[in-house]
Length: 325
Image (cartoon, rainbow, N blue to C red; front, side, top):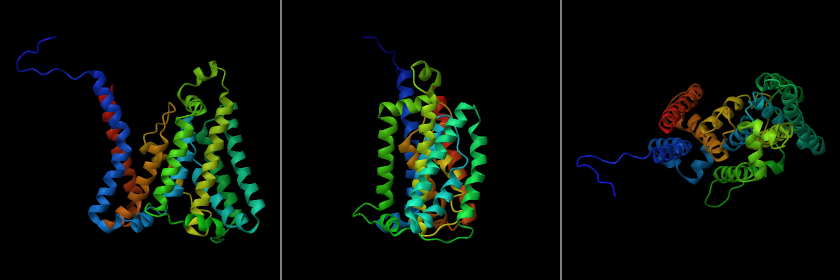
């Protein structure tokens, strides 16, 4: 046994320090959500209740679904700048065709998912930058939404209104839905063998190709999943607002990117976290309106508040990463 000189302490092992840094980095999304909740509880304790969470997290479900949609694209080292207008397009289809002509509405929504899959194939086969392609598609989705619904209107289908207005006992519906979304996507992407392949397409595409897996197929699947969750996001949004507008989802593009990054995701390397993405979406939903309202800050500062939270969390992540290295 090695003797320790008087007045000295053994140094912490680098491996232990790195492990603590990784743990702290993984807990950052939860810590940011906890800080926002503590601020809300301090400003208005009555908000921390069943009714309060239902009211504050009213729009958290479509934001979480849009964030998950963006996460699948980021997992493949791509970026989708059209998810916001796509959510608006889905909303217009939901409030019109899906209610008045369900078969046509379902066919259009399934076709939009197929378009997303084709975009993934096009980006891979032609080696096109996803930012440029999806930026162009954002104008396409916006134009189609305006053609379907030139002015705000329409109405959500009755079955969708019934689903969104569900009031489970003890746990508010937005929290229950967030738990289900996070658990289902986490299991599919992080705990299954094909989920490893999907993440590997962004983490190490060369190794995946040498192993015999098709990068084209993985890109198609990732973009198809983005389209699927974009459709769910648009439908959930209309179930909450009860009517549609061609511009209703325009802000979701930046919110979805911020939610993924706030939840621990990175733009390269296939490093994403479904649970973290949902937590990031909840944090943004709470910080945008309820927190600023309780602080008597005008709604015009909502975007600035989200940006400030994102910058603080990213700065903390950089410091932790330096510590880890």
